[in-house]
Length: 191
Image (cartoon, rainbow, N blue to C red; front, side, top):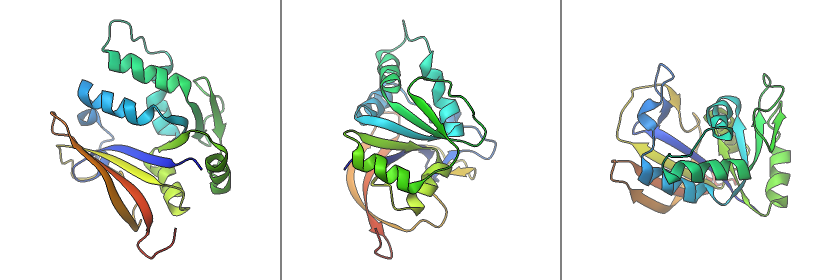
């Protein structure tokens, strides 16, 4: 069975956006981008909330000629992955290999995991919260940027109680720290 990974770039205090909706402090440098690319390369399907999709859809048409190799590499990863976008507002996708679903259906995601030959990723904290609540997330990867923003949109869902096993850690020259965890079960023992 394929694994579902939730990855987020966040502040040290655990926010993906500050109180004003900004996330300019979370721009990866070349070293970090190359590492993210290696993590995403094995992804066959990306499950995305609307806002995360709208942020990432620029990769569909972004010119990468003359840009650092890491950008062109990520564009290939984006173009090569299937995308499922959960949105009640979007009607048509702005990218190839993309379908829009109005509702997050845990049973459908479970079937995707069972039938996939490549791993899945989930992006966007609101849609990830639904996956966490359904026990679908197998791994968590958090990139902590050396900044405290004091509030905003949380990277992890409020009220989530999970037992995690650290599987990987890495420090980058920029001061970013990556922590990769396997979800063992909820703190209450259910999985």
